[in-house]
Length: 572
Image (cartoon, rainbow, N blue to C red; front, side):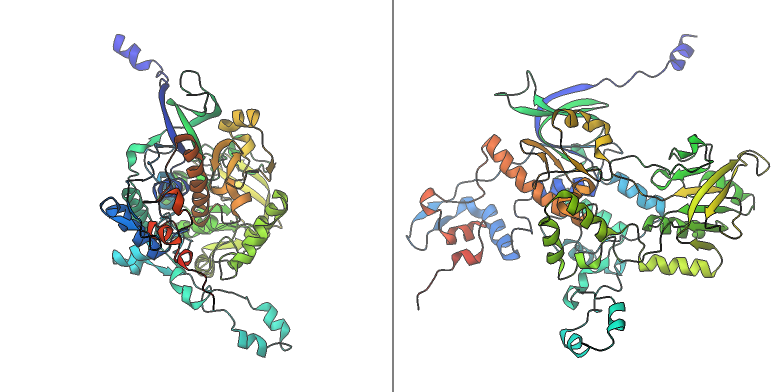
């Protein structure tokens, strides 16, 4: 009886342990953004600041610098090189999904059956080499896993042809896309397989010593920034990160949480309130795409096994909706009814090519020089222009439509949805009766609805940011925080933000891997400056003294300067 009583007792909550060790930085989120920031914090010669030649010279000095001396070319002074290297950051990564990198990312790719990324080869998490992913493909002899992103390269019109066409066939020219990406960049416009990208991320993790020992599965419940009695030294303000398992302290925090907010299903007239909760496997056969565990749902699989005709509905106009539609057909669903509230937009990327081609600096300059965050928000919305699908998936949809397996309806909305409990005899026999605007001819009862409607950002509603909002309030625009130029919460509050929530400072590509690299670069530079003030970090150089501050040769030899700094003005 005693054993039965103990077995039936509710589990005790996990005790919260306090770690009094003060870390340099805690990264919240172990996805691509978190990994990109962590790798950049461990890299002393990033590709964004150093050329390949400077990389080689600096790494040689870092390996052999303590054994050699530097000689000033002008004065002949010989200086022994001290072992002056920046201390590494004490780092911890917290993730709510798992105690490993990219767990959520890999799970979603496996669930949706996605074989290749949408992003080009130059978007990856390696801070040291722009062409790292391309090199990895050839080094591991996996170049066959690369798929060309068509319609990007080789389509531009030469200056000569533009001059020849001036004044003639203007309407035809206006209808043609002006894609400005050079032929020399063709190698960049391939997309890697998910397996290759995952392995490449693993190689970056191993290179920088970012093993699973620094990643902890914990859900953050609160972030605060204040003097901690008994922990702070000299009244230094610290971040207190409270999770479901522990309480940790850090000098700086990086928020790399992706969309951050929970997904929501639109409230449709006639839908039971419980059906708008985006949870898979519920009584009402409806869920948000972000919460899919098994696809198609076990209810649909049971009807397929019983040789019944199955009809599912996918609502959404982005790439996820197209991927779910294609996957449903490949897994045996009789017919998919795909509804989009707007037109079907086909783009290689979820940002316009003008933000990625050879004239992207003009677009970025316009964005960064905008007078206000509101103006930047409008530029960002215009650049992304809602959900879109790739040319590859557009072809797949057209093939399924021709085979009668998919019905695609654009500019169509669900205006009423009624769940009929006993539409089919037997257990779990419910179906949806859907009314659309405009009406869809021949729309049958629907077995399951998948809402691929995206996730709206609203950082003010995140539970773990309520203390920060109360004690260090900042403005918002479109649900995004108005950060400073260093992607910091505000001056003096080193809570850094990466990913989608940094869009007002990074630009339209902020939610993507390319935006993660830009954010990591800014955060690392600001972090170096911050930590050098709090810990007295030495400059990354070898054998320099105050008298030689203007020596371009020594700056070049140390890897801190470029070859241009060695040049001298010669009077003719």
